[in-house]
Length: 406
Image (cartoon, rainbow, N blue to C red; front, top):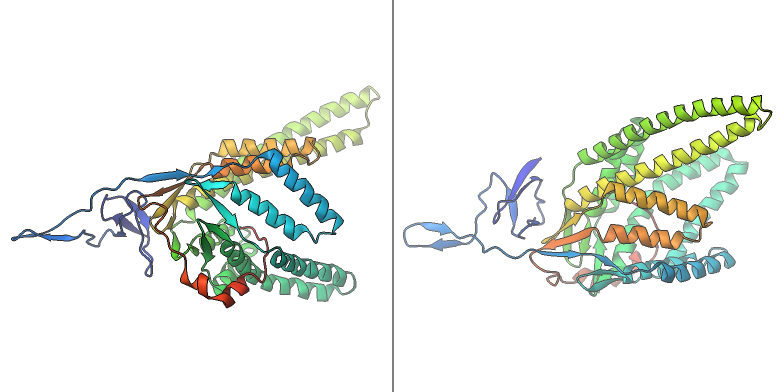
């Protein structure tokens, strides 16, 4: 990895300059290049010596995302979607997904302008039917022909990268900001490399390759996203991913061992007291203990997930450029962990009725801690000619809409 420097403000960072796209400074927006290169501004002939004038400094603009979603409003959408999905045996789930996403995007504002989701519910329904059909076929065949079911499982494993590729294209194509649509430029080969080759390496390395796989998944997405005709560049590294997972594992394992030992001593003490007093039988005490351990494991699991998500998002956004635009994520692990645990408690004690409130709360925190940094403004983007004229390509991206997380 080489060092690259800004030609205007001397800002430097470790990374590489893509051969096919320019890389701009996150602070001033000037072009960046390798430290060994002579990066200079426009030349000025003074008559005796040719000087190189520096570009005048430009003001840095910072625009933080604003989320105006409301828990009570979203609850009305959520409860109607749930009811219609149940009575239609899941068919309405496609329309429910579009309604949910349109509400979230419409209430996500950047510099006073909302995002828009244009997804077609019929395309999402096709995707849902494909997944449901594959799942039902696998369950049905497994009962009678386990060998055939194993073959179907491997077939789905080889088809999965294709579904990821189509999903990313669909979601990007159907999202717009200021009437300019996003695009996903990743290749199908890149999807198979990320979700078949790298995913297949994970179990053979006793899961030590898992953090690297998460890095490659983020790279595949963030290095191939485009807004109109402007493509993105991701210069992240695997190191922060490994540090996040190792720290989460050490802290989680330590907490689990300490709590298990404490619970074991408490179980033994309570069992002796209950048995001596002719009270609660030991097996019921053991069941309570196992339930307690399950809750602790769930809390540790969700806490670790929140911590890893926080570290990865802060790193990934800091290493992503979209033309002359940079990003800054200021998520705090402690705050995100508290939101996640309290959301779990609220959902549990409300029997699921506070799911909309929990989603709005978490979405607001994540979005309002994401900032766009630019010196070129947000109006210097043009729509992609390809997305406006290639009707066949658009039809292909609308053919399947499948929700696949990154």
